[in-house]
Length: 121
Image (cartoon, rainbow, N blue to C red; front, side):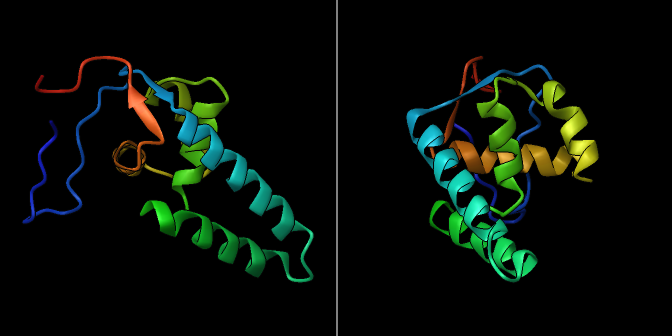
């Protein structure tokens, strides 16, 4: 079980770059919704504003950040670890720490699961 430190709520698990994850059925469903709302937003009269609103509306029920959808998208596409998504992180200007936080939130929302043993187990 991963512990929560109330003194440092943004502390993230130090996932190793090759620690493997897989997307759950709930994660696939959430990604389908993510793709759908992004497509609808792109067709809006003000796509940038609609896209921001759509990402926020998608993320809130899962207690995610809007950028977490990017990490989920890479995992759905078959990438399994942080090392595999390094190129995407660089392209989106996301740090490894932010990606680790996204992994933590996606795990907490049961959208992904760990394939390898959890740290400290």
